[in-house]
Image 1 (cartoon, protein in one colour):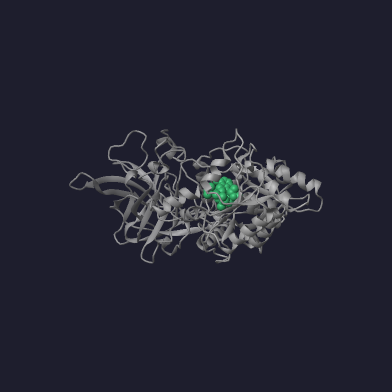
Image 2 (cartoon, helix red, strand yellow):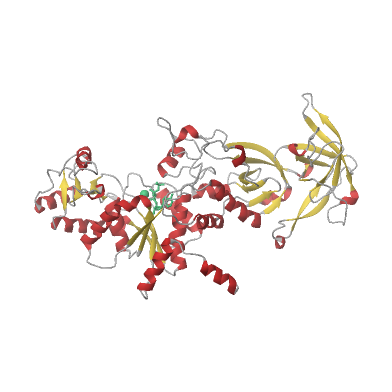
Length: 565
Ligand code: ATP
Ligand code: MG
């Protein structure tokens, strides 16, 4: 990087979280920042999580601090090892490393229990034997004080005895809870004696059957941050209102002045997409998609399978930036990020999605020429590939028109086009089937126009092609948006997001590609020239390649489908 670039970099303005961190570092000489990414292992990570990962790990990288990976595994009823494994894979794939700092809220269950006992002893927590409905009803509404539980003032000894009995499993699920004793008239509903523990006779993936009581997220989360020495606890806006409660809990367990500072930012929303894990789970469970890694899903595993690269997602997160207010980001911005990356890095190949035969009548039968064609004009160092050319080719059906309008520069009777990397051909005739559909196009070629031969003659149109005897037959999966409306989360009463599933979000076709890609493996990405970016799917076999269309070459969707509800 030259000096100018460095200065530009520095001049790039800080986002509000970076400002908070720089001020922290300035006022805490010698200290390092410490962040964490705290997923609940109850689903696969999505692009919104990717933003949080890039933010937390990215800040630690930028300011030479540390970032932990912490699983908030406080709700064993919904959590599974499969999710933990997928989360780790996704964070690593994005390019981040938590080193040996892999933590679990369940690591702290014993400590949390001790602190809960201390709260009871201090008269700051009590066992409530009312039903969840009663508790919720008494909590009331923000404009009026709630009603105190009849158990609120029971003696400390009784609370201790009952809480211990809860732990030992002497109560059934739901029989009682431990509540913090804070303020039933607080205008902040979260301060109205929130539940700290509930009884759950459920197996936990790490603590087995040891615990019959599990801490609530609000009780576990802030204390976990405190235990790990987190300096900046970054979370999404909906937790702003929980902050006073987190601060209250922390003030009960420590006198330390330095405690984690919570900073809220806007969660990422993307148009034509749902992002809540509950909804994604529903799409999977009800079979609307083929799994968490279905290439139409906004999950990291889905995007990876679709052909997105880690760099494209990190660039996207960077571009989106950090906001203080909720907003919706255009999905086209995400698509732009992958186009930009693959344009620079993907090998070009010829693939014909809707083939029609073109026969060059003056080209010798049985002859094959191995043409050398650039891998990627944006990156000459990628070198060249060999593409066989012969008398019979497949071309794209829509690259030919029998009766074209004036400005049509592709192939039509009597007109000449360039076959990319090969020769000029002129259409001489067409043959149709009994329904009038074109079966074969006939043409002649001009041997003096061979690409790279110094030919100076010009022609307006260029089309791609694949040699018939050499073509590889393959399956191509064309994806479109999963939803037909910009805000599938925001539907009319009586409707659900499922009412707006796009019935045409997946189209499977058979296509022809040049033979060189035979050895490609899952994850490899290509530009099918003039068509878009495609990657090899994991469903590929030795016999047959399967491609996913990552994204079309251009954003044509917006224009065609900008109909709003
Ligand atoms: P969801 O609502 O999708 O189920 P969640 O917030 O319950 O997500 P967690 O596993 O608790 O999921 O999230 C882990 C971290 O990722 C949290 O710090 C959360 O703030 C952050 N996060 C989740 N969704 C988004 C999003 N859309 N944009 C930015 N950050 C997010
Ligand atoms: Mg959550």
